[in-house]
Structures are given as C-alpha cells and as structure tokens.
Length: 148
Image (cartoon, rainbow, N blue to C red; front, side):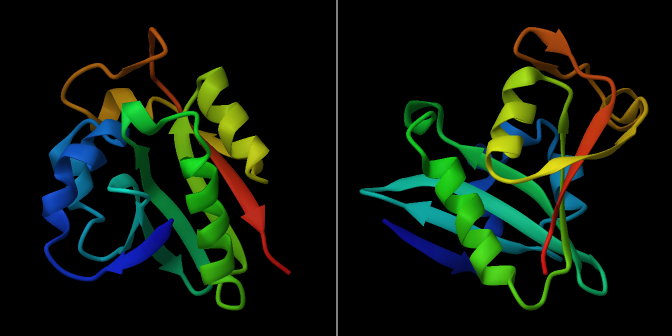
C-alpha cells in the first residue's frame, strides 16, 4: 500500500472525487487550493483532498473510495495517514458530511467527534437533490479532530 501526494493534473481523478462530492462545480472550489492524496494498493483505491482553512485549521473536503474497494480499511488508512501527515501543523481538522449513520459512524471510528452543522447546506449549494443511503441530504454535519 502506498499513499502519494498529487501535485498536478488533479482533475484526472474526477470520477473518484465525484463519488464523495456529486457536483463538479463544488469540487472546483477546493481542488486546486487543496492537497490531494491518492492511496494505491495494486491500483488506485482512494483519494482525498485537504485544505488549509485558517492558520492551523484544516478540512478534509473530499475522501472517496471506489465502491469495489469500500469496507476494506482503505478509507480509515487514508484518514490515519492524513492525521500523521498534518501532525505538528494542524491544531484542528474538520470534515463535513451528510447526516447519515454510515458516514457519521465512519468518521467517529476514525477519531472525529461532532462539532456543528450547517442548515440546508446541500439544498442551498447543489443544483440537484443529493441522496445518501436512500436519504435526501439537507444539513452538512461537521466533525472535528483536535491535535495536541
């Protein structure tokens, strides 16, 4: 297993990025200003984009694992790598997600805790309704991990 920092031609991963963020115009808002990481294990398995929001506050803007590789530990391994990579320069790492049990459970398992929510984020910012686990997403739930 290898995780690589991707510094150019980030749009080549658009198919994977769209699994986690369903609208290309939303991805465009953070893709170039973020650091991209790709996890390979006998081929590409997962991708993540992390942005510096302010000072030592970072946010995972996108983390996606190909469906055929989900539930095999790749997402958790990538998050663990991000924690290691940003240790020393990050005081708080945020991640925003839909209000679904599967997503919230994953991030809590990775060490995040619920921070706050943005009401109607998915309704106000996306052209089409977004569904996850059969549920229409409305609010963005933010989770945080504090670094010491």
